[in-house]
Image (cartoon, rainbow, N blue to C red; front, side, top):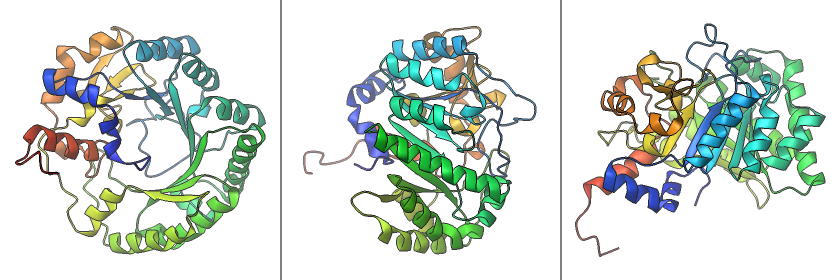
Length: 350
């Protein structure tokens, strides 16, 4: 079972059955934004919808309260992401430690700029996985994808190396990966990114397709087949210690020109929740910061009451797929859940 595969939802059949019987499930995975502040200038950022107007950050006490509610409501995995970059909030490392202490599996996504000798060890000690969004194999591509200079790229590369060294020194089981958004202008750098990632000693290099942001037109990237060809070329670098990973169904859909929706409802959001740095909860990670997709405010109500509220149901009932990018966060889950709902003929013949 691929660690990025949507079929992982079938490891939680109890929640799927709850959803089938009642129309609602408690989330399995949460994304928590510690801050909307970021030290990168990515032109394709999927962070908070308008970071320039909302520079919110959670205090450690606020984060602990939210994390406790997540655990008490049956959450199992918690990803620290953004928003902005979680390391731009000095409380993030202690919040990670707290989440792990109370029994949550912890993931951490960062651009890697603020990794240092002190926080690297603490992340390695407390995270299940860590992913650094490098999005480049050389300085020129880094300027394009992060809007920052070559010296910053060199710093990030060295910081990834620190992560790997800390993992080895501490004999940790944490999974460390690097991420790369794919689109036409960066195809030529995909192989060098993989070569660099393997040289640094990470466990995987992950490719993800660049999706449109809310309000943008759907991307019409004629280079899809070239991207897929480059991924196949990069896959030769996989071995027993290093993997080149990507969401197979997404790239296959792109290749076949089938990147549409075969489902009519977003069932996947029942299993994954998003808490932003302004303490508001949003329907999914692609619409964080868009008010019509806000399902509640943790400054006013508790997580459990928000999840069971009429407001959440109203927001869900009024989803407009025109606001959602194709191949979105919940796309794979939605395909699986839609087919479960529809049922099938001859189910006893596998």
